[in-house]
Image (tube, rainbow over all chains, first blue to last red):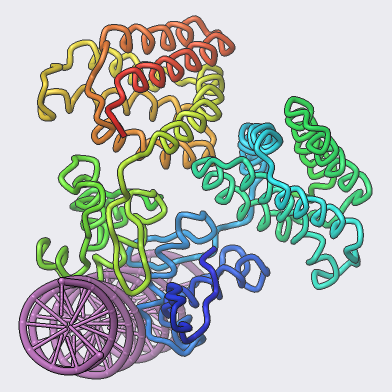
Length: 232
Length: 232
DNA sequence: ATGCCACAAATCCTATAGGAACGCAGGCCG
DNA sequence: CGGCCTGCGTTCCTATAGGATTTGTGGCAT
């Protein structure tokens, strides 16, 4: 998001410094993506301020910024709550949205890929393969992180600020679903192969194939999640 | 985002009331969409607070919420500025994004359209036809409003919260471009015909055709804008 | 037992104050 | 004349205070 910066700007390097609200924003985002803040839980402004040892003002600003991500919801005079767990309908809509955007991103990324971007993409797939995949969150956290990074990189390489912004909003929801959807890692080998197929298409410089492989991947993700879905 | 609420709650209808930050948000949004705030202009927190006769706190919150729309940008310790005018590249990216999302919306909306939604859509096209189209902003304001409403309604009827959110972000940028892109209303008759074609496809219940007509519309919008584009 | 009202605590919301950083103008020195 | 420093006003940022609203609890009447 916003780049971390040293507390003191080096002379000649006038990097934009961080203000308190930025730190609060990042802390809350991390807690949300961690699962430390559970769906439905109240996020009290005053409470968070005490927790983080700052005044309520920066917390209020951070929450206002977070609202657009869909991860917290606000009700006037009542405060913020972590967005509730996905229903089946929410999940279906999320996948429908992914199917609308991600193949386009894949196609564009394939055409506009930079060497550095390609390297990063290879690394993400490599990380997927080597990540531990235990039963507890701590164990497969790096797996989820690499998965999200793979898709985010593609969106970034598509070189379209609007599509990137649209994906990033989805990305947060996707990550949150991975945590709270009640579905662990199912068929990791299969999922890795699908990512590899997308990457291979890009390495081959075939935009249509990249888009197609992305469609197949998302559809299979949907299929696995539905097959594994817990009771509503 | 956060749902708008009536200014006065009717007795027995405990709808969530508006807080000051909501009013400020709406005022700023209107000013941005109006063109009263020009691209590049500084949006001072204290200044806006004086202007609106409120304290800086709600203004700060409203601006934080506005940032994600891309209409204002923030630099830490320096404040907010209205986003700069579109470059040709920005415009190309915007149209690319529209082409990725709007045809999908049109297809889905066609399949899921409600009678009320269809009525509203007809009304929007009707308004397009009857709107005055003079040279000054005040005169073609209602035309632009109907245009935006048409696309927004389709996004809403697609019944996908994520695609709707994605479109709404684009919609604001589109509207702002209509104002500041340096392109007035060119070939209104042509544009109206394109909207009518999309509507007809929906009336005919043909999702593929609706999507195709939407693609053609956006591409022609792009074409007209490029043909009319002022010097960079 | 159930419904209703009053009261208390927690929370949200807004205003205000003051410290910190930025931008600009004017003066000083090379 | 140009570059640098200094001072000052403006603005941002954070903390704090207090009023308004919601929420939870306990008592009372039915």
